[in-house]
Image (cartoon, rainbow, N blue to C red):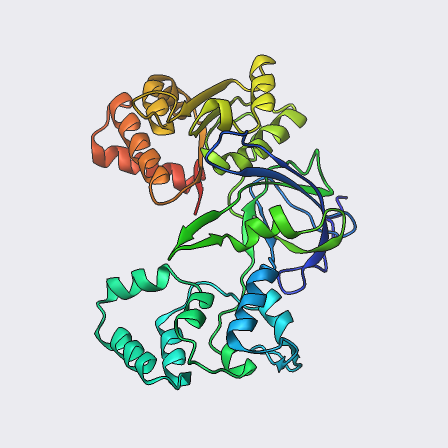
Amino acid sequence: MTIEASPSAYTKDRPFPARLAERRRLSKPGSEKDTQHFVVDIAGSGLTYKCGDSLGVFPVNDPALVDAVLQGLRLRGDEPVTPPKDTQAIPLREALLKRFSLSQPTKKSLQAFHDHTSAADEKAHLHNLIQNTKPEELHAYLEAREFIDLIEEYPGAQFTAQSFVDQLRKLQPRLYSIASSPVLHPHAVHLTIAIVRYQTNGRARTGVASTYLADRAALSEPAIPVFVSHSHFGLPEDHSRDIIMVGPGTGIAPFRAFVQERIAKNAPGRSWVFFGDQRRAFDYLYEEEWELWRASGKLARLDLAFSRDQKQKIYVQDRMQENAAELWTWLRNGAAFYVCGDAKRMAKDVDLALHDIIARHGGMDAPQAAEYVKLMKKEKRYQRDVY
């Protein structure tokens, strides 16, 4: 008789205080990106995961940003506020650190500043902005700003602690694809994260969760609230089935887990990875592992696309086309096809390439190729984890 593990008491609504056991940079000096590897210790949580799942991380806002917001609002930070659906008040500073998003103001936010400013010029400007600005221009205005910008641009706005947080949205957890196999790492979760840093409106910005893990979360202290988000995305039940994985950039994360697991279980099915990034010398994530697996034959095929290593940019979909005949042979023989990463461009380009390869090498017209892809999806042989 098989005894199934009981579900963990820790969920999204009651996250586990995990320990950050390791962080190291994957991208090398000279890279335009800062991509890092994290190990999150979940021992004692009862949390379980499978390849393809994600780890939800509740971030903490940058204390320096919270201090700037409090100073701009002329508030101390110890004022009591009650977040939505809560019955107990907490100090404003704690609320701004852990409960509310300080980015992405909306049209509703502008209305709040309009209603709370005593300065006639600010009120007139905000009224004109709300009522007379074209939607796309208003979107661009708001997209370039965070709440600290509005506070500094409209200093006449005077909020109570509660009236300020009432306009804020909840600070949401971030989901990161798990980059480890539970067979090898049952009590730890590996993550592959690009640290977000950029500029808008003349001000340096950071991704809340990525910089929390990279810069502010203390190593070895059980203080990071996490939960496992179970996914439809995952390995085939049939270990003999071949798999093709397309994961440029941090999209490689779940496929590191896939390959780890297939090797650990001695799966007879072959594994083929397409990975791409900007430059091989700086951005070849987990290079030592991929090359070792390829050399040992544990990874049947590895095709790399480094877009900026030559004059003409080469992407993963280009490598797919270069190997179209072999790729079709794998698909025709039942291989599962996976894509992880950027939804806006990469996943669309890969999907177009897939349709084209099936049509050309399968002797189909476009509608027939589309039906073939539709059948692959129905049979769970075509899965995507895109964002």
